[in-house]
Image 1 (cartoon, rainbow, N blue to C red):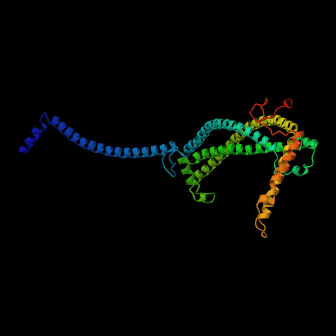
Image 2 (cartoon, one colour):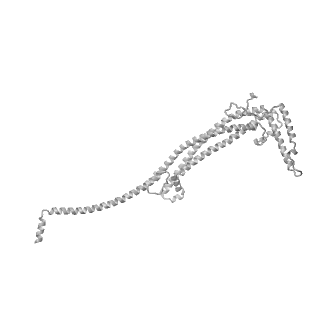
Image 3 (tube, rainbow, N blue to C red):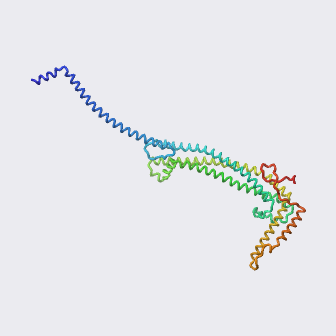
Length: 390
């Protein structure tokens, strides 16, 4: 009965529904807070994990891109990060193009430097040219015992009985040709020096430039990586690697062709420019020499220089006979060695030669060429006085 009364009071309580609603709300909120907290925790763990993967992947990708943006770092192969192979290949082609552009600028600087050095070389050769003409003057105004051997001729042997007319004819024809041979030899020697110097400079420059390119770090590493394979061993590579190997091979082939074409064009211009500079200078000297040789031959004839040649030849022959005779006597085993003065009366020989020379001088004056006055030529070379001053 008591239980019935309590139940009756419970259900008739005006706050019954209010209390039930508050309890239900409280229970629901407790359950919701636990579930939300659990879900939030799971979401946080998931977010942290995904974020870690993203940061790690982004860092790896950034590292690969940086390695391809820096020409002094190696290209890494077989990676799963970074830009596509097409992008990498485009970057490599651009590196070559930029290098060729810079090469053109370097070529201009090199050419300007060579032009300066060529001008200095020509200025130095001006002095050598003057000395060359002076050496010709000294050489051809005097007897040369090696004339026949040096020029492959027989003028010394056949000229012993020549008269004045024959000597004049010889110096005006064959003699001039021998002087021309001296000029040609001098030009050739200097041309060899000039061409060798300019080509050595060019070869050194171009070799240094291509060396700079192939030793660039990323380029050297790439070549070292792929050069291990040939057409046969490349078949052992994966499809992707084999494709990269063919791409590399095609690219370096194109670079080689472009380099050879660039070199051929620049070398042609370089050689032609150098040759034109040399030819211009040589032609100027050729004109000067033509004037010089005419004056030389004129004075050689006017001074009857062959008389001096003959006298010097006689003195040379006497000296040779004296030396030969003295050597023969000193080498004899049958008698004590004799001195040259005992075997040959050199004083009487010299006196006889001097007497004969004085007799010839009384009729013909022989003049040893003095320092020659300058003419209208542009250089201060030894030249000969005009016939009007004779």
